[in-house]
Length: 328
Image 1 (cartoon, rainbow, N blue to C red):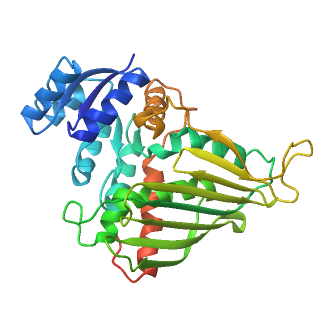
Image 2: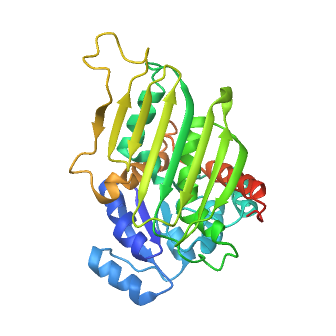
Image 3: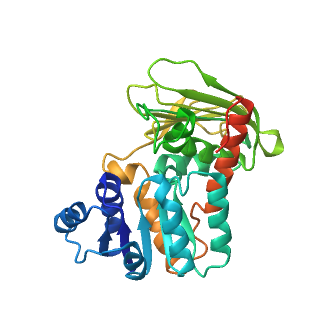
């Protein structure tokens, strides 16, 4: 069993990552937070045996570190952990500029440990099923991918960042762009625009991936509730559509359905289990299971990396450039 310490005892660290770590099989041996009272309350509530008085102590106390601090604080913790040869899982964003992410990549290249980045939607069961079908060859290959996410926040800038568009990337867009890259591979931005919407902000872009696959991403903070959609058009004409990570439908093209298929109309091919709620439904348990496997030496288990985060930053910076805004 892997001994893990948690740095950051806010809502996300204690109500999402901590139970997800338990479910993934980690042994949580200590907590650290700058707010000692908050850390003590979390430790008592969750039965964690030890409060750790500093970040350095938290890094040294276990086999791995899970970091869930405000974005601007992540860089220094990840850099320290990797320099000391400790595996680290960091919530997104791992830093607030591309230059900082690239500096962490350089540190990791000299370390005996690795860093995983919290891009949990990759591990949602609905996304995994969509990816399995899209890559199976049954319906050809993807020719068009659209990923969208809208939520109620952020309604103001995060961490003093100068533009709401930057905050929007940290809160929503990094997930959308990452999933687009998972489906497209490396992609270049063709067009991008900030959208005039009331009650928030939104940005959209078109991408061109490998083999001329067309991509579209759109995300915003102007919705009354979280909405997440992935639509993939396959070369056979079949359309795969995942709504809110809950329901995956397939609409066959003229040559898309197997010859023995009972119906050629749109049908539901996967639904979320009623038991898959909260952190499990959103993929947190899956990503932390993958992280722990990586710590244990299973290099075949894929984790979202600092390189993946840097790719998302570069794509977003290209979007900002197209929209006439300042890059991160």
